[in-house]
Amino acid sequence: MAEAQNRKKERLKNDKAKQNIVKDSAEKNAMKKMTVKTKEEVGLKKLKAYHEQRVEQSKSNHTQKVIKEHQKIKKKESELAKMEKLESELISKLKNTEKIQNDALKQLEEVIRSSGSLKKSPSGGKLSASPKKSPDASPK
Image 1 (cartoon, one colour):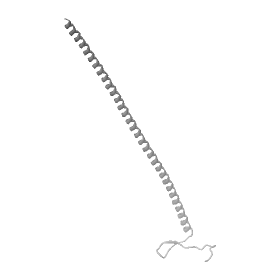
Image 2 (cartoon, helix red, strand yellow):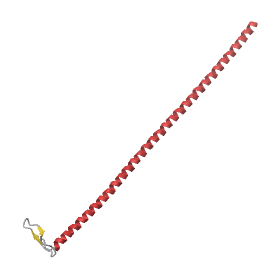
Image 3 (cartoon, rainbow, N blue to C red):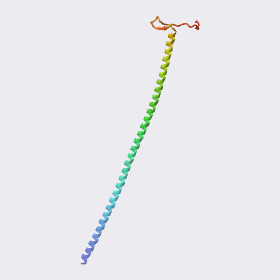
């Protein structure tokens, strides 16, 4: 009977050791699982931060492009305004020159009419003014 009790004690001892091994193994597995889960969470946070950084960088790049385009547009608008102003000034000068020419032509026509004689030229039938001698003109 002592032998049966020894076997029983031995079996209980082995069962207890087995339970301890299973318990230790379960704890180690739980720790490994927690470590893996933590690493996974850290990796996901890093990935999310990376994606957010990329989105922000893309937004920044887009904003810079938009700003540059607006600057180009403003520059072109300014150039266009200068060209329109120059065009307006040139048109004004042209109109003024045209008015001066028309006034000079009218004065010339008036002088020709007031001289009193329009004669036909023998060389082609064109009208020409015959010079009148003015009383104050000296002979040459």
